[in-house]
Length: 177
Image (cartoon, rainbow, N blue to C red):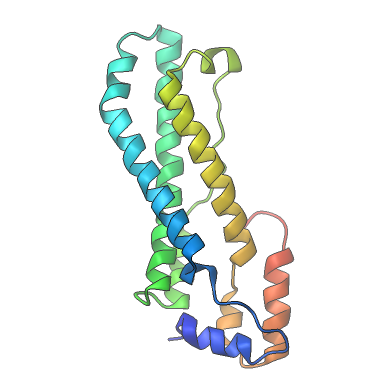
């Protein structure tokens, strides 16, 4: 089992010294807190005030509310899963291999708004605000995920040049995962 600290040593022994992983940074802790706070805030809204809002919406807007709130929930669960896996990795509760395996189970589908603009504008402001914040968080996490993906081969490689090559390829890799 290769832990992140072991991988760090492998990477440090190469030609280019990489900074410690993002999961150990204050930036990750802030991102984690922001993401989990957003999950709690959205759940509280959808179970409380949001439920009250739906009673007074016209039928077409109520349908849009249902659609967008389900998409919001799905998006936030994907993001929370990603954050929890990375926190477990940072705390040493999970190895790099275990994190990669768990990460492969997270379906990071793009959860954009599907409601027509005219109808979307009629949704409650609070829901639109939560959707906007979740989309921005999704973009940030998807960017981090694609930029920080470390192939399993990196964790297992003892060849410093191969490690550098794999890390560079992971950063510049394009296309869906």
